[in-house]
Image (cartoon, rainbow, N blue to C red; front, side, top):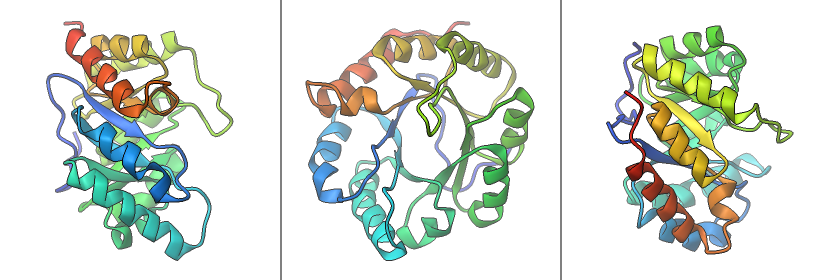
Length: 219
């Protein structure tokens, strides 16, 4: 089991939420929604996706969102952009694919969180576990493609049974939140499920949190 950095997200017996933002261009547009959404739910981490921009703009956006996220007690992770993590005051980064993850380790570890998704094989997942702080299963790729949810559940169930390093399962619906929690995910990631909910992100995140509390992991 890899030794987490000082900011590593501690797993809990009851799964916690991991919130994924839409691509952030102007932080002011989502700041109020984000702040209100973080109030009613126990969110362990927020993965900030950055819209394209120059380096200074990206850092400023991350700092603005970081004030909200870290002020709510959650860890701020950048989606990629490993070189900006320290200057933005983020707690770590999430990398897609074992190659990008391996290349980022020397910058992130041991002070900051290094998580990995986009893991195509069980072998890649085990490699990421040896050096990182968590693995993620089930997130859509850049083109929006995602493996079947049954395949995601199978991978989470396998991981929870064999490994100690935390596992994040990505949910595309509230029913999936519940199913991933039952399968043994340490964290359940939610993204568009929250941001596109007609009730608003605060109500959606509150429901996601409630689904975690009613789902008991399979022994």
